[in-house]
Length: 406
Image (cartoon, rainbow, N blue to C red; front, side, top):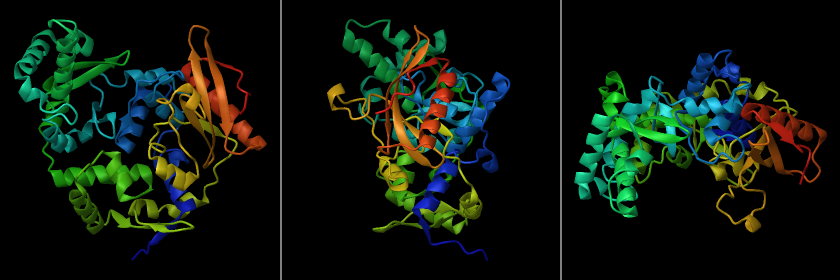
């Protein structure tokens, strides 16, 4: 019988995290590392990455030249045109949009696993029982979409009503219908969602598959662990926004242990030992992962919402890197910049860079660079230069003053 370690070191957990994130020798773990020669092939590789994580977080900010979903994919697929990411959700694609980690694109295979959330969201998590309180508006929205076809939020807001509240209400009703599983997002164009009837978006075979809550939790938690490597129960729950359901989470982790899929495994730090979990499949490859030698001189820029980075406490623990998002701070209170992209070099986060895309001028301006070391090594500067060149190519812009440092 194979013996597995009961504890991992920070270095081991960091390697597992990078391997799970597709940022360490991806081909060894059956993940693509380059865009395809044709758009169809590239889309298929993007879908494989999303299938691996189980989600691709969406966000509207495009100040750096691409939105987060484009940046995440471009950091995994060398040669990817980040603009292609904007077109991934389309009729026939193996994706659907829903509330997973945040608003996300998810593999269509996971649609049945969110039946419990669609039931839970019959009452909107922030706006309350909108559908019951405004039943007539909900029926009107459904009839319009049934007869007119897919409608954008702007289309829904642009008709009827006598004031701003009426327009805002229509949009809230449409969003509530979507979360409750009565509408679906058909596609996005210029990042604008199109609402449609579920039966015209989600294939019948997918809709008809019944997955119980226990199986759904097992699937989601194991998928989360595949992307994290080692993770605490809290990180696994946060991956899918599993709130106020600790008993179901614990029961699911127990079933996965009994099935021989995962094992409890603590993380040993200098000060304490933290409980967590690892897939047995990852522990079986741990020695292989430890033998890999990532090249520090090869850098890549990561989205601040990358699957590797959104759990900031975890990033601090594994990489000794303070991940900050300063979008919502006034300019004079920002330490690093508005929308900084961390720089991964080998297995280290060596700094961050704040960028601004100036499309009219055809340039990507480097507003600031902050290295973790006061005096960065030559290989770190080389890693940053390579990361900027790769990123600027993915967003189709030339670089302006890429050597400035702070």
